[in-house]
Image 1 (cartoon, rainbow over the protein chains, first blue to last red):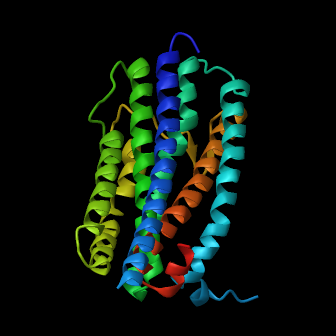
Image 2: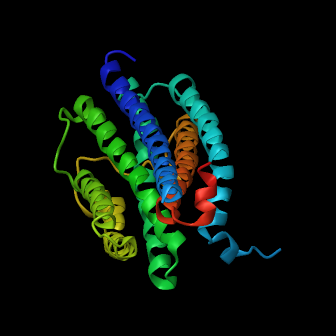
Length: 47
Length: 242
């Protein structure tokens, strides 16, 4: 990879990071939507 | 065999279908990505002019293709939602936007890190690069507009309209290297053929396929969350959160 390994790995590294961040964001969003439904259901059950 | 489109257009049915399909697309993306990176990093020969730095092409070009392709598909979903007033099409358009924005950012970032050793600069206001940056802003605009209204259906319509107007940017990106004298090189792969060495081409196509499968997996996963957010008060959605 010499002498340009910095540029190559910065490119591959950011691609991998972007994909990982998106996957984490997807999981967080899904967990948040399920938690909201559970909270609303529990609130209605109390009423 | 007739496919019951209206049956699958129901959010509750599509929620289950997407949940079943998404993991398969992620598995396919991982396999194709591993194969593409192996070919790109270990099998493809060193470029005669650029040396090893050309290997950025194996993520840069597939990310650029996906940035434009996802926008096109997103605009198509927007058109379907505007024409037929279908909820699921609007949700799919919303689900695609963040993935499209991510690939546009990756295309700009990797292009910048390819430009520094080859052109001597990270950034230049070249027609291809500037129109790709406009695409990123169009994605941001779509996401912002879709979420700017209290009534999500109004947000769907406004964002779909923006997506359709923004379609004009796609031919500008694609033909910018032909229409203007740009620093960015011309397309290595055209609809009519390619001048690339076969291992290089295979590496790039495999990663492009991997990104495509990933995009489908990610949008199906995101649309499930959007369906839950929209349909959270329905009985079927509540039964899922047990």
